[in-house]
Length: 381
Image (cartoon, rainbow, N blue to C red; front, side, top):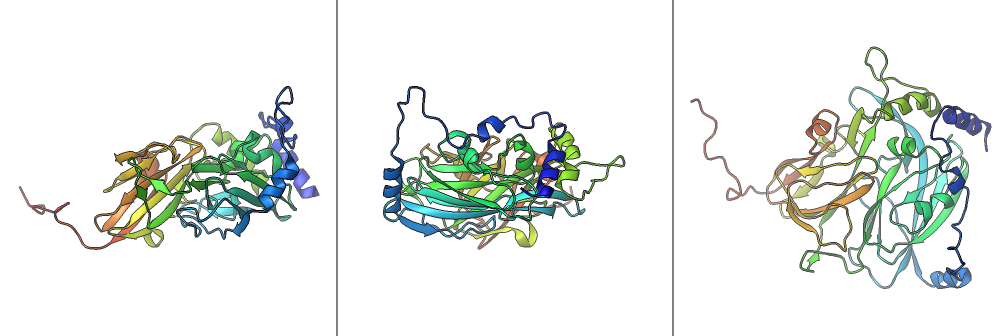
């Protein structure tokens, strides 16, 4: 452990009322057997069985885009290899130059969407470069085991670790950093993402028919808590350690300074708008690791919606707005019927228009007057 890391940790932990709350749990590398010793596994046999499976390496991409994958599983279960590299970096979150000392997986807020099929094994390599200053780990809501793998993945700067788990539940799930005593700080600094576990035979509608998507986009909604000075201007800091106490004070007000899609105000608008054409069937994965949200596509609908993202549940139909609780991810499936610019927003409109939780879909194609037309342009009365 470097001297810089030790100093930063002491600075951050000092005065934190909840510091170390999870330390006794995190310190245990494996969960104990159930009382009475009834749960037993043969680790050697398990390892041997998994060694026989095909291994594939996923090349992750930056959100809102998603790495190549098949919508239906091909063959039996696989071991899917992913690598996430932790990057502590300063990002600008609005056009006023407001800075956040972010913590990220693979350099983006949110981290990449990872896709596997139900029954596959996820094998994650988590890398914490020596250039970082903080301890990190990862908690997968899609995994089975205490702390979602958090106890097995604690890495200091200059370390890496490998975690394997079986994807037993179909749906979309949040993952996030959850280090001892500092979970909310890391999560609200951008250190979260999502995993999509597809059913082996693909997505189905409420009647069991196949739902095939032409495009998939990942929208990660993020709340930031940037301190202001006595004049009401957003403050800037030299590093995470210097910012910590002030950021914690703002966090405890439960009042975000920014609520944004994909890391910044306007990250999914203008030249960065999500694109489609009339007739495209689009899957929208939306996560919020910390707060409730209410996605809404202005001018469109959720033809099929899994508001808590679990694919073995029957999807809701024809939704105008859907509710995703904090700490979850949801999915909407929509076929575009008209061209134009569609605003995709958190329909707490204050959060959308005043704090930044909005993006755009830019859809090309021919207009259908049967669905909508101007009968009379505005005229004087």
